[in-house]
Image: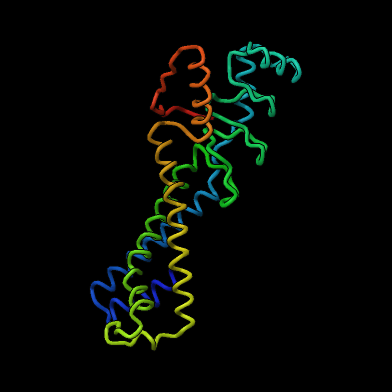
Amino acid sequence: MCAYCHLTLVLPTYYPEVTFGYISHLLFSIYLLICIAFHYFKAVRTSPGNVDINWSDGVLKSHNLHQLSSVELKELAAQKKLPFAFCKKCVKPKPYRAHHCSVCNKCVLKMDHHCPWINNCVGHHNHRYFFLFLCNLLAACAYYFFNSIYFAKTMYLRKASLIRGQPASSLPESNDFIFFFSFLLAAAIGLAIAGLASWHAFVIVTGQNTIEFYNNQYNKKIFASRGEVKFEQFCSLSTTVP
């Protein structure tokens, strides 16, 4: 809806004729739409990364624990006697930054959260696409909102004035409602996406994800209760993951 109003109402108001400015705005608008669609598609279709069962079995064999039953492995995990990270739901070893998703029922590498809007987990392999989708969507909302301020002002505050030689009152009333709704929609979505994108920028810069952030905050409280200080390693090393 916002794209429709931008291309059929806002741009023709600014540029009644095809000029360099009109073509520039048109191409930039199409570019943003393509980026949004591409990164959304990649976030949906790209697997976040799951733990390979062969890798898990290899870890058990390397520690001579492959002959133990699931119950015995759970008991060792509860006693914290296993020399590796262990998923009690999968009953398998897992990488240290992997977390179990209760929706997908799988361990996801560097899991951030399960997003219902993409019907997928956000993890190691698709976090970049999810973040770029948010950034491009935020840019599109801001671009449409600020370009529409003049159009909104002339349409609703100066009905008797002219819009590039065209009386504002001559515009179809149906377009008035569609534009007003899309204007508010872009503002509301833009504010929500700005907060979400800022949050993901923060956890990316600090080498964390959402789950690890809350775990770190909990651990800080535990350390503080003991009179100790927990130092974070704000980096994320590029390593081979299963």
